[in-house]
Length: 166
View 1 (cartoon, rainbow, N blue to C red):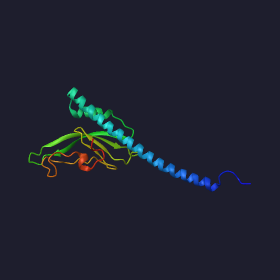
View 2: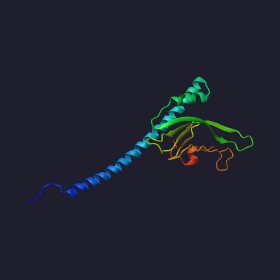
View 3: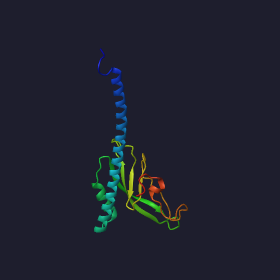
């Protein structure tokens, strides 16, 4: 009489295959969550930028005051959101004129799952920067007389950011 059912070896083989598939699926899902959270933070920075520009135009308050008020009220469970003043470009002539801008920065919270994801930066001029595992925005100086380009480069274009190119 032949026994019906599975042997222990067959059961163990099925469990091993299921464990491998589950590990792959879990890794992919974790990556998907990180990308989704990063995209949400990018949209939040763009929303802050639009709110700052709109409120500054309607109230005529100084840009720095409006920006600080909106940034202080912004919250994100995976990123700390801050702002600062930055030089985006310089004139290479003797006038030493500088184009000033404000950057809105989302820094990953180290203890969360986004910890080593890299900072996300957006300026009020619209320059963007994100690079995996980067620790700062790396805003570069590009002058009007730059021999490589006659117009200003965006930060993303200059650094190969994955977030550049709408």
